[in-house]
Length: 110
Image (cartoon, rainbow, N blue to C red):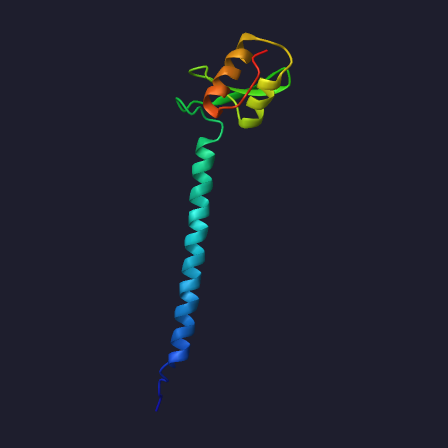
């Protein structure tokens, strides 16, 4: 005669906790993968039209330009370097004025 032993409540709890933890880990991994895929889909894409950006060098400052709308894009460090660039240009003067308006900064208009 074969008797089937019913799992104890402790075993049920153990497996329920283990399954819940595995499910949580799986969901976290799926969320990380989705977040990374989303980030990669926007990396080096124009914020205005979505086309690819190409990086160019202007006097040591990296400037990203859209291959479609030809917009110019800078990160914060690049914008700061442009504002502080010693060569006075109309681009620099306009950009300083924009930065004053956006951030309230006291950039000189030299």
